[in-house]
Image (cartoon, rainbow, N blue to C red):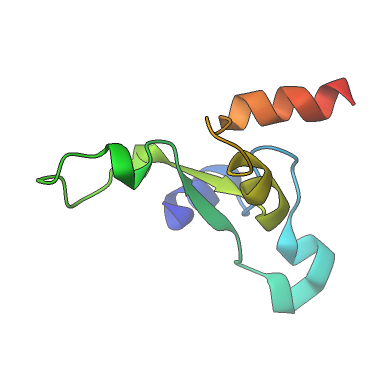
Length: 86
């Protein structure tokens, strides 16, 4: 998923806030991002062992924590809306 995202956009960045670890931390942060599962593992069938690349969203550590802060979890779009309102 990270490779496909980087091919499409040219670099890895948070789909919520736009943070880019490589631009901020230089070589040390290059290629780093977290992958968020849109569908929680707890909601997958016991038979489902593979997750689709389309089910993953690229997010920075801070946004990932905010998405999972309270249940029900926020979507990437919901958190993005919260950021834009502030």
